[in-house]
Length: 113
Image 1 (cartoon, rainbow, N blue to C red):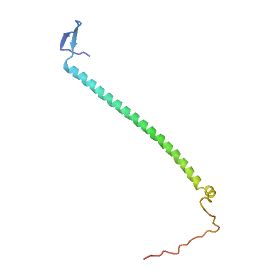
Image 2: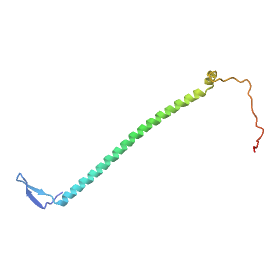
Image 3: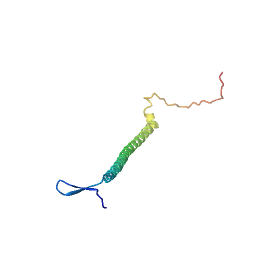
Image 4: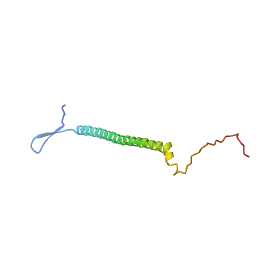
């Protein structure tokens, strides 16, 4: 790539130095600005993905813990509802054994006025 210069100046060390026209400076600045903006957008998106992944992993761990707690509570509920458990605490609950069961029958509906 060949860049054409419009002017040549003498530098401090005595060598000639070429200056680029203003439009080339603006073009380079524009390219650098575009690269910077695209790079910043890329870094932002990668960072957001990492944050969401971390948050998702945390929620998955919490779901696993809650499933385990739920299973433990179901086991505790089954233990508390078991006939053996009820029979072992019948004295504390002031329960009595019934010899015969009494059933109530419904004879019909009654309308109240």
